[in-house]
Structure formats: structure tokens, C-alpha cells
Image 1 (cartoon, helix red, strand yellow):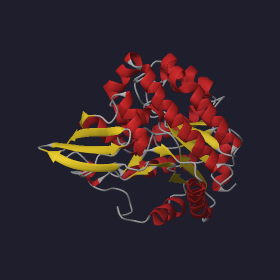
Image 2 (image 1 turned 60 degrees about the horizontal axis):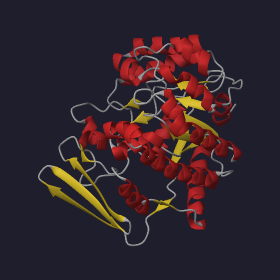
Image 3 (image 1 turned 90 degrees about the vertical axis):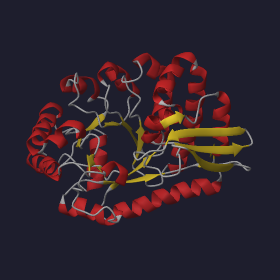
Image 4 (image 1 turned 90 degrees about the horizontal axis):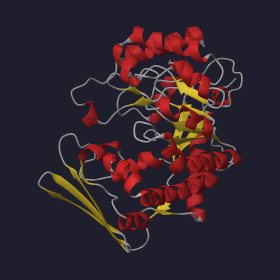
Length: 380
């Protein structure tokens, strides 16, 4: 099998010639690496194609080519400005629907310079004022990021897919497009505590945001249909019982995720979904989504029972899982090898893609990643 055929078959829970191993390598920003050594065997500025060559040819991995699509544009009359007040960084958009404003603590841990992006994990710990608090904020946000389904926008999306396909074809790799962030993106915009409370105190606003994003997701999936893109990766990292109960997740997300999976499949693509921690109370909910694959469930966190994960999910979705970034990779080669052996023993060889959960970081011991790969070669 080619690597592309192997990854697609594993995601369909079909027989493969060997279990694929696909690793995400997270370089981290210079701010996050401060005080740590760079341990990847390539330099931080190494081009993506050279990194891919090393990962495929030297390490023997079944890598996939990621790409993103942005089918949004601002309406006319939108202007932005950024300013500092002491140690607080402000950014505001002036739009026909009103002003949209956010403020963050501007310190040596802020990684975005003199800018405040909409979607960043680092917004959450720095917020003085989040982007979205009211219905008026959401309307202004929509003016900055309005769905664009023009022929030009569709063509741009398909060009991104074609470029990824060209890069992937060098090694017969699969491609995957990032489409949608749901409540994960909502946390970046509302803040964590604020969003959790809003699901109770103002669910209409949360629902309005998710409906807006769902519309963009569906339009993006339709633009990518039959474009050569193999898979979609929907980010559900914070859509778990760490923050919400299963009934709440079903209420806000269930039908939307099932609809997005349906549209992806109609366009010849598989639907993968990132979910990391807080999974045990929502296993039945996840099974009910009937998604093609679940990426990143961390088997090392307290309370996680791998056999229960297998019994509930493996008959419905393939699983991208392996050594924990948080625990095994940091602890070194032997802990990592033990994790690989456990994954093979519990999940077998059908519907499994071995992958670090959720990524190998540049500051982690490289020996751990090599141990994962070596143990995979013995068991695959």
C-alpha cells in the first residue's frame, strides 16, 4: 500500500499492510521555547518540504500534508487599530455593525507581538477583555469575518487543496484540511470561564455563534468537495467533559458535527475530529457522532480506561492515539515504548493510526520520539 492508501484504509477501519504511524511535530513559538533546548533534528527555519522529506525518508512515517482554508472576508468600511495602555494591549475593529474590542496583558509570555488574533490558546490566559461578550459583539465580529462563497473564494480553497495534493504526491501521502473549531474557537473569543457560564446564562448567544461558524464550515466543505483532499480535521480539543456535560455537547454540537461529517463524505472526504482529555464521561456521545476518526485521545490521563475507550468507540471510529505528550514523551524512551506496546495490545491493528497525543514538541527529548518509532516498527 502507498502511505496515502494506508492512512485512508486505517481511517475507514479496513485492513492495512501495516499500522500507519503519523506524527505531528510542534515547533512551539520562540516565546514558549525560552529556557529550553531545541531537540528536533532539523533547524527551526527548515522549509516544510525538507522537514517532510526527513520525516518520510529518514523516519519512515506516514505523514499527511495539512492545509487550512479561510472562506471569510470583511465587509466594506472595516478598520482596525492597536494601542498600548501600560501593560495592557488593546485592539479594536471599527465596523458598520459597531466596534469590536479586546484587551490582553502584554507581558513576556505574550507570543503575538503587538497584535491580538481572534483564535489563539494564548488569548485565554491573557484576557483583560475578550473579543465576544454580547450579541452586538457577535454582529461586529461577523462584519470582520463574513462568509465568502464567491467563485473567487471557492477557487482559492480549491487551489489550496491542489497545492497540498501536489506536495503530498511526491511521497504518495494523504492530505487533510483544517475546517472548524466550534467551542474550541469560541473559548478563544469568549474566554473559558465566560463561555462556560454563558452556555447556562445566555445559551442563545453561544448557539448563534456556533450556527454562524457551522455555516462557514459547511460552505468550506462544499468548496473542497472532490478537490483531491482526503480528510477533514475538525478541532474539538476543548469540546469535552473538561468543560461541558454530554447533554450540553449534544445540544450545542451533535447535529452540527453529524451534518459536517455528512457533507464531508458527500464530497469524498473522511471526517476526523480532535478530542484530547475529558473523554470518559462522553464516550457514548462520541460514539453517537459516528465520525470516521477521533484524533488525540490521551490514554495516560487519570481515569482514562483504554479498554473502555476501545469497547465504546473502536467499532464506530478509527483512533489516532499513542504515547502521551504530557506524560510519556517527557519521561523518556522506556515510558514511551511501554505506551506503544499498550496501544497495540489494547487496540490491535485495525482502525489504529499510531500518533503522539497530540504532538511531539521541539523541547521534548528526541530520544522519546525515536523510541516510539522503533517500537512501532517492531509491532506494526
